[in-house]
Image (tube, rainbow, N blue to C red; front, side, top):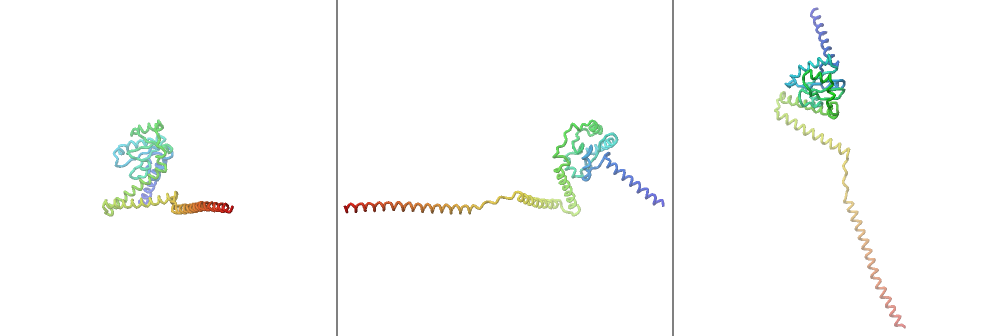
Length: 266
């Protein structure tokens, strides 16, 4: 009986702890771990978001300050704090164009700004309390993480992560040499590129159909027939003119003969 009671108490305590953790992550305060599924939560309200990696020394030195800042923001500041491990969420790395670590963003109602001040909790608190973020230039709309082009870029980053995992599996689990794995990916890349290129050409031909060249041979035959007809007509006209020229002297000679006869008769 006592064992059953202990098991029931253990289950109750575990459920309470899980509920407490979920409430802490969902109430908009404290530190929220962002991933591909919940990153859109930062598009509403005011947030400070940290991008880090476990192997980054600067990130490790920032960790205690960030934790303290998260606790103070929950108690005294009307701002939420979140963080992202780039090794677990490569898509967010491409979506936010994270090129250095650690990188901190300030987000206010979907408007993103880079935080480039001190990395101690006092500087971050002052940045929020004194609204220093208003003096910073916001990220342009075409580079905003919630834009269409950044969403497409995020998919490419996620694909690259899957390719890396597949490469590791081929080398470690199947014993394939590294050059063999690279060769497979190279052939696959060429094949996919050829298929995509063919599809693109078909789409372009469908939207802008090519203009077929005219058949000039028929035009040339027509011109030749017309020119031949014209030349025949000209020849006929010339012959008529020549006949007329030949007839006129004949008529003149006949007239002269008649006049001579009349004179002799007289």
